[in-house]
Amino acid sequence: MKLTDPKREHMAFDKAAIPAGQTEQTAFARTLIIGTRGSKLALWQANHIKDRLADIGVTSELKIIKTQGDIVQHLRLDKLEGKGFFTKELEEELLRGSIDLAVHSHKDLPTQHPAGLTIAAISEREDPAELLIIRKSQVDLGHRLSLRTNALVGTSSNRRKAQLLALRPDLSFGDLRGNVITRVEKLRNEQYDAIVLAKAGISRIEMDLSDFHVIEIPPFEVIPAPAQGVLAVQIREDDDELHSILSRIHHPETAEEIAVERRVLRLFEAGCHAPLGCYCRRTKDGFEVWTSKAELADEFPDRLYLTAPTTEGLADLIAAHYDANKKHPTSVFISRDLEESSYFRRAMDKHGIRVVARSLIQISALPLNMDSEDFADVDWVFFTSRNSVIHFFEQAPILPDHLRFAVIGRGSEEQLRHYGKVPSFNGADAGIDMERVAAEFGRIADGSKVLIPRAVDTLGTMRRALTAGTNVIDVPIYKTDLATAVEPTDAEVLVFTSPSNVRAYFATNQLDPGQRVVCIGCASGRELAALGHSFVLPATPDEIGLAEAIFGLEF
Image 1: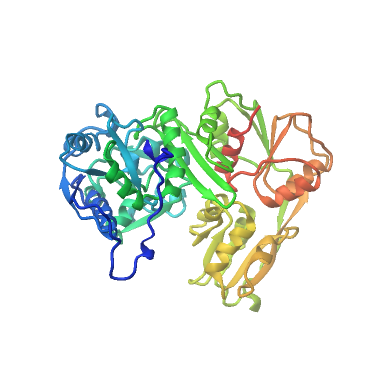
Image 2 (image 1 turned 135 degrees about the vertical axis):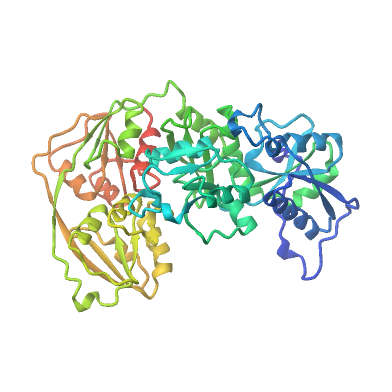
């Protein structure tokens, strides 16, 4: 691809640099013909590129072209012959010269371009999250994703099926074809209980979904398709003049990120309907990337999270972790009781990893008097653990209608849903760093009154990190007692889920040579660091993050 050709320097187009009421003048005289599919979303995408070209003084017009994917509606997408069934006809028109450029959803493109064609520009990425769109009669707030038990979900994506089944094994799936509007109409006609669509597509056409219950699933919970949310502008490889013009609307930062995702796709020789997700994003320290891979839509996917200072060699490193000869630990100890159906246990079971799960602490409740004047006019309750949720609601407090809930991560959210409540803020969206979570929450809750039910011996990181404008009531609601004479474990990996569990284990034990340690959060990490032990932190403080961390270990 010429995006990495050093002879062509691509620069992001800065529309703000052009004086108001003027367009940037170019020496490009001809009117360009833009090839596009005819759906509302495809036309929005083509018109978006047309408008960007107009901004730099280039005129263009659209030509609608039907593709195999538009014509053949009775087959599942993964059963259609070959790859590129939403792009092939556009590419053929481009090679014939009847159009000058084609606009594609980048995720629909095969990893190998036809001879004579290249990608000359890509757009800045829109939000790559997924939307779970649920008929309101099928909502059940007590379940993860707010969807009732055994619901029927419409999607044609094997990637989405595999990841959603990992989160909710009770769900069933039906094939869903058609453009975005057609798919939503099928949901309205009650052919499904819910459907899954890319948020970017819904946002672009500004579709009204007010008659549904909509759940946004962030890209690190259900990992998107490579290059999801990105547009690709394809041209003939020998059209140097047009290539130079299009460099003005190219977004190099996005190009660097999706180059990792697309190379992962190519290394696995996977098409756009394989059960493969990959998402790379830039951070202040470099890059982080999530990958989810399964062989079949009904197989539990292996997930991986890696960070790196640059993207060089990152895709190849990801592929190495998925090598069939990769060695996994034979056993894992986790300082938490687990149900047989838990995500973590199922992730370990897939590779025959023996799991020993037991808590090393005993917990007892402390009374909470919500009638106290201190608790009057509370706006938020922020739960920093599963146990704080349990011991808050077990006391059956009478709660005002306006009260909103915040949680530290997916585990606390799952526990909160057991009581029929849904959080308005989830710290997992901000990552594992408590201070960053507090900063994100503080922007929402600034000026509010926030109750933080907590353990007696908690470090109080959240309370200290919140902005001065937030009125925080920090209330001990349970206490932990460490188990005595904890038996050592010979597991190859030890997973600690709280600082008190760290203290309980290392009060009488040491690590054996070769044992590895993973901890669920920064507070546990500080306890381990004080004892001189190295450890791995997951990307998110939940069972998904723990499974990713263990899959990423080298043995």
